[in-house]
Amino acid sequence: MSQIKRVLIVGGTHGNELTGVYTTKKFERHPVLIDRPSFETFTLIGNPNAVAAGTRYIDHDLNRCFNFKELEEQLRCGYEVQRAKDIFDQFGQTGSLPIDLIIDQHSTTSNAGVMLILDQLDTFSLNLAAYLSSIQPTLNVYSSANSGRSQDSLRSLAKHRVGIEIGPIAHGTLHAELFQKNEALVYAILDYVEQYNTHGIELEKSSLPLYQYVVAVDYPRNSEGEIFAMIHPQLQFQDYKPLNPGDPLFLTFDGEVITYQGDFLAFPVFINEAAYYEKAIAMCLAEKQNIGIS
Amino acid sequence: MSQIKRVLIVGGTHGNELTGVYTTKKFERHPVLIDRPSFETFTLIGNPNAVAAGTRYIDHDLNRCFNFKELEEQLRCGYEVQRAKDIFDQFGQTGSLPIDLIIDQHSTTSNAGVMLILDQLDTFSLNLAAYLSSIQPTLNVYSSANSGRSQDSLRSLAKHRVGIEIGPIAHGTLHAELFQKNEALVYAILDYVEQYNTHGIELEKSSLPLYQYVVAVDYPRNSEGEIFAMIHPQLQFQDYKPLNPGDPLFLTFDGEVITYQGDFLAFPVFINEAAYYEKAIAMCLAEKQNIGIS
Image (cartoon, rainbow over all chains, first blue to last red; front, side):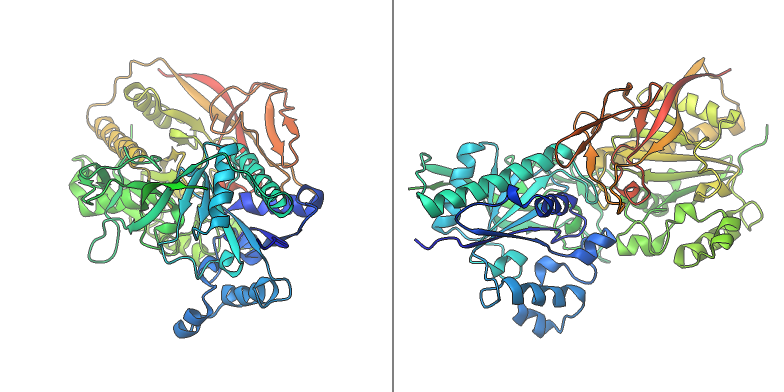
């Protein structure tokens, strides 16, 4: 078992997700809050220029800028591409301070509650999620392993990584109750790592409910690419609730209902996330699984 | 009694308030919805460049660009200043199509419900509000007459004007239920104008509950101007609810409660509106009044 030596807590990967920004600044004011004996903890405001501008990003979504090969092929440049390289040079596995675990704090306009995102279903990640679920049963654990997102996100530069999503929060705002829940989850993760490094962990839980990404669903769009429907009122804020074939999905501006035509029992997440309109995502459909934890 | 000859329905004065944008586009696709026999109805996307960019504005808030004397004194320029002049040249009182009534559709991250904003408490505005309240008792009527905003907003160029605010809606998203409520309110206003022009209106209601703007309250800020507290959890989404001296107002990032120290029973509105963080407004405090309607 290799120890976790360096943990990086990130806020402001998206500049208008204020919870992570102000939580990270709080940690920088009071480092004792995130000090643990067995490892070093660092903090990072991911996209400071976007934070200053009050926007998600300046030129590109920073959280899609860490696949450098792809960036070169696309000839992408701009502030975030340079910022990603700088972060990689410092915290990447070949950098000056290679990071073993990144905790990347996000917020969403969808009804995420408190959500832990796993990018890979390795033993460390699953045990961490099982531990956190055991102390916080309302935690929603989501796996993006099948989404193709594991290679281009900021946290992909670390050996282990988790994303936190809290919601619903309008971008550009703070929500005190969710601020405190996010902060508590960060402490719980740090406490887990401390135990993992020192005594090892004994888990009582034998299975972990996990929402596994299957497919993204776009809004209905006309020939010019403009949306012509909204999330159906019955589906709004119903993240993690079962969606059966035939259930209402969208409501057109003219009042017509569009139903779910998939062939599996889906659990939608990221329903009506503001930043995903431009990414052609109205929601992500997940399958609910129970993962055995030994 | 002078008739209303031209009505202008505006959406997208703020580019990321999608409800007004898509409602206005719907009206443009189906003009019959807003046709009424006794007056002409026009539509306008206020800030099309901001709509395309998915932001509130490009250079300046368009809804603060219609006091041209002030703009000249401040030497302000940029996209919205030119856009304001173009709109004024077309729809202002000395323009080619002078407008008698503007209906300006907005949305807010605060818990506005369905809110009608009156900029002035003239007989036309009060009777319109009383009529709308009589058919929709949950409508919240707010007067910004004391806020100093009556001279620089887009709708200030018309003889009569109302603002619609619906919420809570995260900017950059749509909320189907509130979309339909906003649309229904626009139709009710048009129907009122039709009756006003033709038969006159008989109002049964003798008094109108009105939230009258008193003062704006900023977030607590440090010497660098950075906020150090959030809306208190007990106050989040509690728009139009009574706030007594001593009640919790903010919660600092370190967990301390800051209470309301004012000397009057306040009714906060626009609590936690995302666009107001940069305007140094955490909420507006209003007084509740009952206005007699004869």
